[in-house]
Length: 106
Image (cartoon, rainbow, N blue to C red; front, side, top):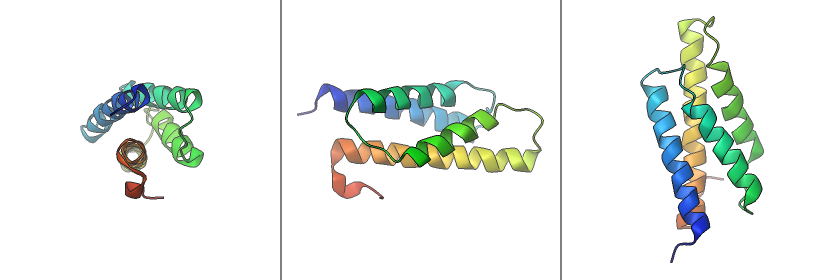
C-alpha cells in the first residue's frame, strides 16, 4: 500500500515530467522547471527521503541559467540538456524510492 509520501513523490515526478517536456520543446522562458526545483527542495527538506544534493544544485543552477536570454543557441542547448538530464536522474531517483531501492542508479 502506498503512503501519502509516496503519492506526493509521484506528484513531484509528474511536475518534473512536465518540466522536461517543456525543455524538450525549447520553452526556456517557462517557470515550470524552477517550480519543480522549489517543490523538490521543499519536499526533500520536509520528508526523510535522501537525494544527492549536487544533483539538485546542478539542475537548479542550469534551470536558472536558462532564464538568461543573452546566451548563444549552442550554449543554451547545452544548458538545457544539462537541466533535462538532471531532472531525468531526479525522476529516476524519486521513482526508485517509491517502487524499490534496487532500481536506483547510485
